[in-house]
Length: 284
Image 1: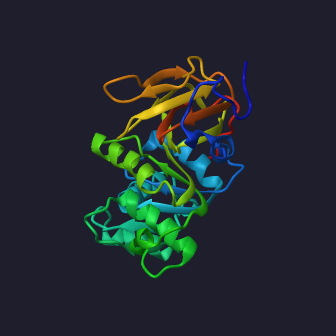
Image 2 (image 1 turned 45 degrees about the vertical axis):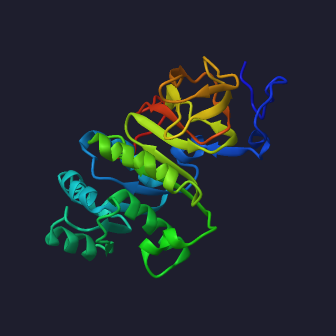
Image 3 (image 1 turned 90 degrees about the horizontal axis):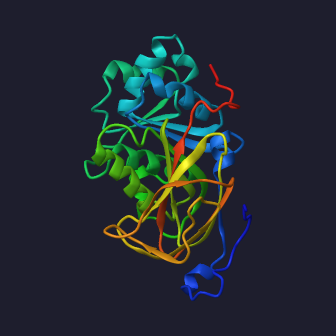
């Protein structure tokens, strides 16, 4: 049966951290367009990405493109004379993946160009900093990480995070950990995959039943999760330890539109993405 709420561990001894207040992750609203979000577009989009990208674009309150993504967007949207409809608010990066002519084209259409030359951070990192900088108004996007004790009421979607090189994928997952306390939520999305970081404690996940699943996984990255319990999955965990070189929950199945995950340590939640879904209208 589907369980909708916080659950106990049936008398088992669990870490006190599991007694913290629940964290509700409303992925149904974020992916379904009923909740505004910040959309970050990475340099891996192609023509197969456009329908889903357009869908996410419609409910975005702020759109930031990496410089290489802007170049791809010019080619992909320009081929269909659609570029004027899809101009991001910001383009950022070291601008090594975009020509001066393309920069001027976007600038002439009202897009702000931000050159961030640091070679210590990837374009995704820079785009995330721009999202925070735009919200709090500090003088330099890269100074965002020096500001302590902020959690911005923003939901971030990084689109294109699972395409291309494996080291870029791992960097995107690392960003979930680096920025875990900076935003209300942060999600990595592609045509095929969705991922976010579940914080230690009780997480209540409202899935988008048309777009997400049925396959899913819980992946402890960097550190073991000593005690994980779930409801709403085909094969639920019951106060189990998960770690690389041991048990990890992959190829599991979502069986409810509300999932609960109690975890002693931060853990990555991954689901399949099915787009287009049968009852999702594609925006042209």
